[in-house]
Image 1 (cartoon, one colour):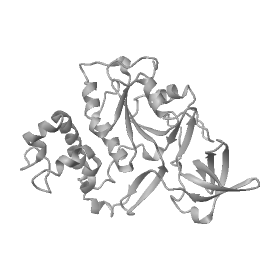
Image 2: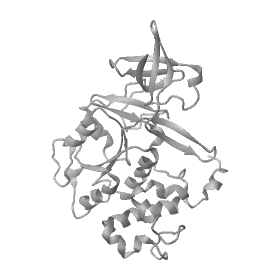
Image 3: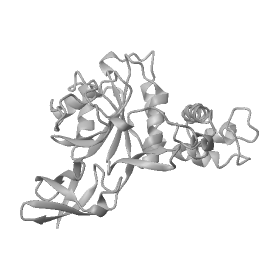
Image 4: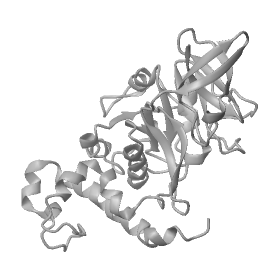
Length: 320
């Protein structure tokens, strides 16, 4: 029995990398494994060999799943599995850092149970009067999110404000499978190129560069880039959170959940004028950085308002 990792698929055929010797093979899947989402990119599988042919006979339990919920159909579409890191890339200059976008992707990390890393790129253009990078890093500490300061155009530049820089980032993701998410213009392509030593061309029938819009398909694949692997999935680049149930949103802010449980009323709105809301209790100041906590609460309230515009039950009846 051969154990392997699924890198990409095409109808019934799957490209797999053998875990023991690193050999790349193509394997067919048995009929009962061809159901939708039964085998996805990132899955670890067991393969049987018969002469020169290979057959996937079993999918091993998943560590995590990346998916989007279809509200109308009441089901989830699994896009990839077994991702080691969700890397959220931001920029400190052109485009300016947007805290809300980082928090949106952190919701996905919590939802999918994937450890998150945050990159502050373009540090060669950093202006301390426009952004407090130490605060932005500290506010994510309760989530155990490591933050890295880098300049993708000058990878040799050491970290000067935070303790983690480009070399530490490269070391952290070595041997891992990650996905990079972030708004357009933050330098994802340059960062991936620098981390991979310039090897960013897609290893498939499509020709293009990661993040350059060369994709016309919506399926996922794993691209091996020397010391690390990258999940490339056009299907999950959207910032939209409309599939999140407002009643479950607080669950995706694990740093706020314990505080929310201390509110006087279970249906607390967590607004500044809410009676008995613990987030505005003086006792909170003894439990952490109130400014950081309130910055995360502000993101929660903004997103809650956004996804509550249409009742969740009503979304199921809307056409896509």
